[in-house]
Image (cartoon, rainbow, N blue to C red; front, side, top):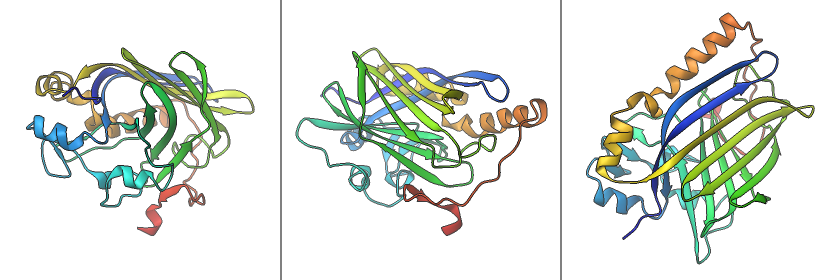
Length: 258
């Protein structure tokens, strides 16, 4: 049976415009998991598991509310349940050798090739987790959707809590692009995006695109974050903003309440 799930090979890019210019691009490997296929993938790929220890695994408890229940059930607290003909893609990096840190995961509700809604799940380095449910998507071109919302969660210590996020999703059979841009007073402060080309999920593909490129997976997210933060602080002399206590109802995990 053909799977909707895919492994992607591409890049992740950050471009900061204000108050100083700073940009970087890294190669990246990430996955689009159809949430109904996780157990099927585990049956087909010996080194992959769902909720069990393995070289590579997806654990339901790593997402959203952090509860030991299927991700789709957790999503139903935020958006409507799937209807006939719909499916949900989780854009994420799984745990490699038991470790993962995903600054952002995307839960894409699809009907065929149409994007219906998105839950953007953001994790910061303090252990907090926040979601932005994007239900009012606008289709601006073939296979392209946009959405906006106010910033309500502390992520980077080099940005305050002011501003709006502009989201862009471009999804077709040959390419996936997801952009999150921070605007303040009508001008962009930071543009970020991840994009890649899909491959079928097979043991050979996982070895080729993930295990043979360990620094392009979630294994290297935290070292990259630390390195870029050091450059911004010591070289670019950016102001540091302390983490405020979360106040939004969409902050699902507050490290102070753990």
